[in-house]
Length: 164
Image (cartoon, rainbow, N blue to C red):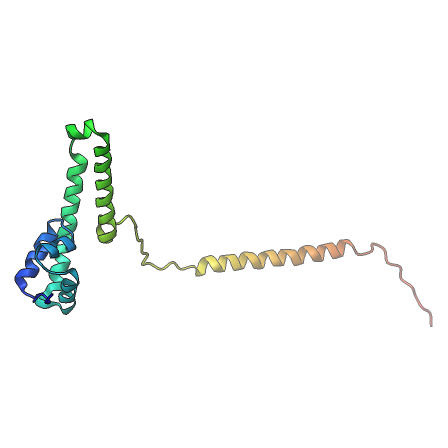
């Protein structure tokens, strides 16, 4: 099979289909292009394809989000009420769309939060205070041990005088 030739029209058609919520595989297949060929074009950045693809990915996420919203907020159909397994299929579809949003668009729809701290905390005064307290404790230990040694000294000492 011959390799598909790049044209801006083909990539525009693929990107338009992708923006509506179809997968990239579906979009490429509908326009007769292999996904790997599309990725090669993306790597070569024909006609600013990388930037166009980045923008379309945002539209793709919005389309998926809108589809998820529609499923969540629509009332169950009579068929779903009659056949409960269809409600389970609806739930599976919602879970799939949520997963796709979280994994393919984590910055916007991911469930992780990143907190960055950009200010400095000066710990020098706190460390100095701790060092001062430690020095006071050590000084108190020395004083207590000195008092104990004075208290334990014999009360009466006998003086012996030598006569020469």
